[in-house]
Image: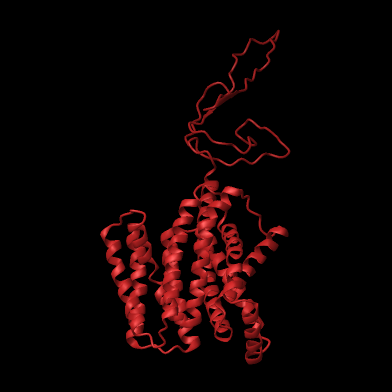
Length: 396
């Protein structure tokens, strides 16, 4: 800012306006004295060469403007649209927003892993005492459907706006989801939780093979190479598994294949559908429940369920009811959180998070259930999980 005081007519010159004040001195001629020469009053000017906001003109030179409540104005340069302080506040708000988003994503991941671990523990406890995976799978879907219907009715969550086309697109996704869910539960009823998840870590291999031979998609060479440790690690873990069971092994393999088709159908059928992740999974659970219930009655039936329930209550006690309720509720919650996290993160970040979730489930189940593990078996599991991580990086 440059100010200059010059002898000129009394005026204040600004870049965006001029305020002029002229003062005239009245004079009278005396009859007895000669006229005195008129002296012009001192003149000054203040030139401002850069636009500023002036809070008040009070006590500004000899020009006095009295206002009872002067208005305070902030100064900013002419090429700025906001005051300087506001720009600083804006950057600080952006930093806080980014920090809050990272905290939210971290909370999603931690909650996702924790809920998944708790579900697998209670699910295995229920299946050990009550070996009816079809009913157990049905109860898991029923609990989730009931939770979401109550949430929609009580306005806790906003109900999705769907039409007949939405449900048609969701049908093949629900079929694949139902098959994958039941197959995984059957697998865990026959083998250790850790073994099921080691085999399920081979899902990327099924994804690449199906996409390549059925859909005609091609992938770069690093993607194909990343399948070698996945397949090799799963094979090594299966061969060295102490409690190997063919039904459990095939259940995990079928689950992998079904979930691959679920993802393919979901990508193709749900394009342009504006449904949140939470509501999408809720609708998927409801439709899967309708598909699974008649098959559960046909395969197992109420008579077997009633006899097994009496046996479980007599052996475990009344808290067996809590086990069933917990595995059903936690199944829905961990899947709901995983779908909600998809709204906030990229597919790559989700893949990495899914790999870490698999590790947490394997390690925790081995510790809690005291599953005997040979060193070679542990090496196979580590190779398979590492291959899954490499695949997620190579595919991007």
